[in-house]
Length: 83
Image 1 (cartoon, one colour):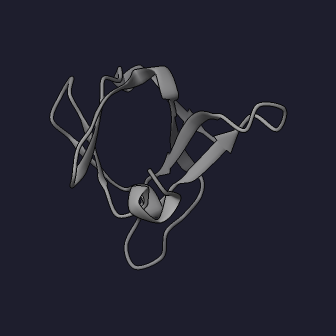
Image 2: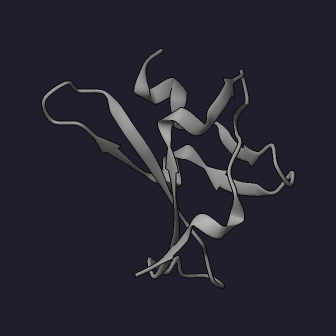
């Protein structure tokens, strides 16, 4: 799969059904040595401007399914990080 095809997918949490936004609005943490994706950082938006203060880091191992339109993750809410 190309990165351009990956970006327009919506991130949905299997645990609570919450929608976290689009992959293209997130950051990918990539291992520089292997080139593999380590995690996805999803930012919480506030109003018109997306603030990068509250975010969730979702491990690549938490991804359960990559479909045509969405990325389904299994993720516990308590892993929220504040920056």
